[in-house]
Amino acid sequence: MKKVGIAYHPLNARVPELIHKLSAILQAHSLEYWQCSAWDTAQLRRHFPNTDLIFTVGGDGTILRVAQALNGAPIPITGINLGQLGFLTEIQPNDGSEKLLALLAGKGWCDERAMLDAELQHNVNGKKETLYFNALNDVVMARGAIARIIEVTASVDGAVVDTYKADGALVASATGSTGYALAAGGPILNPKSADILLVPILPHVSLQHPLVLSSASVVTLKLSATSPATLSIDGHISIELFDGDSVTVRCGTKRTRFLRIAPPEYFYVSLSRKLKRTAV
Image (tube, rainbow, N blue to C red; front, top):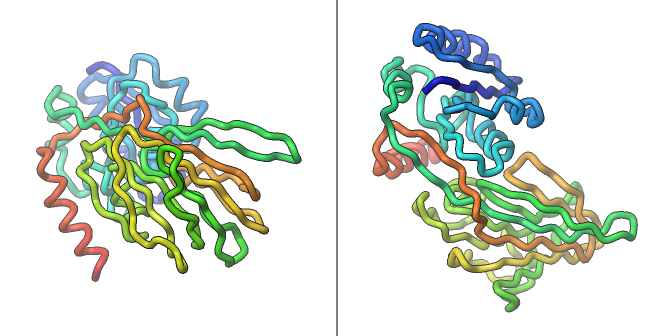
């Protein structure tokens, strides 16, 4: 390992102290490193060439931003948690340096996660526009600022499942199954799974059950609403939607990679602990 990146949450007050400690460890091991806000996608991408590992300093949202910027590039991420739950992070700020040193010494294993591809058919000032995105967590079609239910017609492989009268509907990856999808009543998938979830959000007189779909499934969400709604990609890309807009989501070919030191089965130990914490 020769070059390491540090991508950080720019508004977290605890970031400078942790970066100072991390930088000292990297310098002591004569490693080249760079620092950049995780919110500055263009600057992040300029640093990527020849980078062997990216430490994120923040929470899961920081990791999602870096994953978006990587766009499938084979650079692994190791998350240092300064957020709340940290389902995707690997190291806690009060951990000693042993885990960091082990990772820098080439130990650990690669945790490869499936991503989603999304294609938005969008009406902008009477003109049709097609936009493309990838997501590590989820693609969400939801109501906008007005607290009024919308209608989302969900189709799988061209067959209509239901028209949800709801706050919206979402499509999540296995990684995203512990996020918004879980809060909306969806199941938790093994993080190595390439299956995807279709989950209605607070449905009213509609199909209430989430669906677990195969990795080959193609999901389309079509909006019917008199007021604007919102498309959210991984919680930080937000696009205003209008009546007739649709988004098609499938399991993508790109992957996000994590470098981990805890064994794979630790996911279940961590899951139990974190969900109990949220229930308190």
